[in-house]
Length: 451
Image (spheres, rainbow, N blue to C red):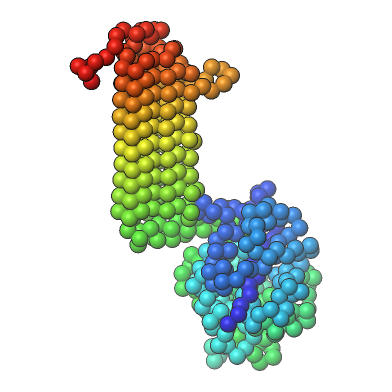
């Protein structure tokens, strides 16, 4: 059955105490609005309408053309917000799904079930209910003796007896479209002069119509976000959901409560994620990797069979069978080819390390290209910054850089060359040549006995 959808996202979010729109606060590495949008798109397979306030341009910029935006110029309640979509949606569908934008963890399966129930319901509306451990300010569902829904009592107006009731109205609805658009303009305002969707449920009951319902069984689906505390609760719930998904997909997570994976991350089978590891952004982890503990990976591509131990990796690429750390730091533009080893306390920035390169501990490589099977001795530093500009270092294949070598860029070392320990290389080094000293000078040509 054809079902359109409306996401109500025009609330000011004043209790968040933030200059950022509430819908852009992050859960599992993605803005709240992303979660809502994903669920609605999956449930309806149609581009939704989203009601926002006149000052929500940042939300528009993030969401783009994935929704039809409607502006609620005056914030006069949920029913008033829904009314702003009437000119677009009247006559366009048989059903209309309406959800609040600050309910980011509602799942597509739950929304689909609402649509299915309302498609069979002879009455005009189906609501989403729950019996949560925390009532979270939701209105109570009042039922008649036959079990039918009689009314929704807002928590602020409920008596002690009503407050003791466990079933709540979550704030998601699926309407028969023709009935909705005929009744919405007839709603009376509240004493505050606002219009509420819950009054539509009361209108349906008062005329003897049947109100359908779907009960949510998982508490974490109905965490509404109004404060930073609610945001933290949703973060925890999202983390459990994300980690559970990857464990079911064949990833070992030793401590799910202490592992933080963004919703946008992908991980290959048989990889192991150790405790206190954060994998964020558009990061991709290959198969059979070992990550952590105490590691941070941001917007990076990690190949198969890699090992990252207690390290920070940001905007970097690791090909297959790379191992780094502990306490390594890969900065933006670092590219480690297949089989690279990078020791403890090393740092690489805007550089490519060719296949089989071994980089010793306490070394820094920046703005550098290193050829295949080269050894970078412990304590090596590429001196790439002269105080004004960055300069490039080029190191060939099968080069051996002695410990504590300073490579003062711009400089080029040919294939098969070597530097003695403690050398300060300020001039290009020819192929198969040994240099040493400060500044480094050519000692001799290398032959097969030196290989």
